[in-house]
Amino acid sequence: MEEKRMNEAESLELITSMINDSRARMTKNLGTPFLIWGYTTVAVSICQAVIVACVEEFYPYLWGWFAIPVVGWLLMLLFNKQEKTVTNYIDRCINALWCAIGVAAFILPFMGIFVFPSVIMLIGVGTATTAAVVKDRIVKRIGYAAIFSSLLFSFVRLLLSRLFTLEQFAGRERYLVECIIFAVIMFLLLIVSGHILNYKKRCLKS
Image 1 (cartoon, helix red, strand yellow):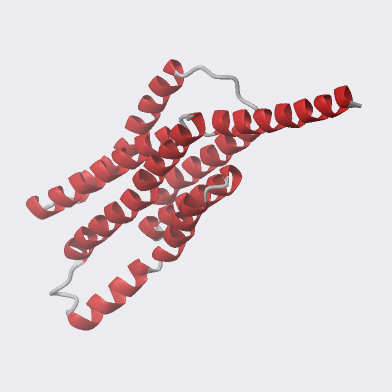
Image 2 (cartoon, one colour; image 1 turned 90 degrees about the vertical axis):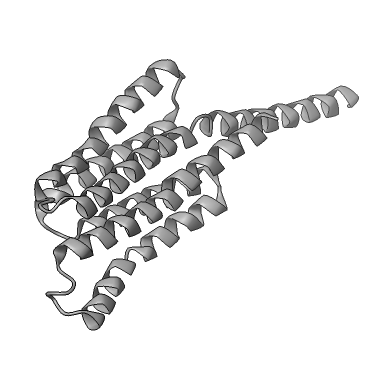
């Protein structure tokens, strides 16, 4: 009987250890892709804002946004080459989700729709879903907050249209304001979330 109880206790301890190890492995470097894409996106957004403020004809520089997928994927390839780990079903699901979001975000500029709020909504959905899988409430709330923050662009446009005439607030000024808002939201959504997830990884390891 004593041996049976000991085996039950050992089995329970083994299962608990396996769950903790699985969570630790799942969250291992999970925040790093957030940081890679976050810093890249914020850097390009700031560069766009500076260009708009300094250059008279800024439309040719709009192609600079495509530096985000180019730089981001190059950094991700370098990161994946350095971190070769075995992936499980959950890892593959998260990767598939973010690949689909990345393709959708890449196509949006060619569709002529509201790019900034649409991209924020897509990444907010991906962040909230990823946080739900790894059971991180803070990052999950950040993801949902980002989804709702996409409405901010409509409020800003409505407010500025009331305060200024079309001649006073042309596409140039509006684009500059939207670049700054986009950079701030992406900083909170990706960079802050990435640091939180990496902090969680360190806590699980300890």
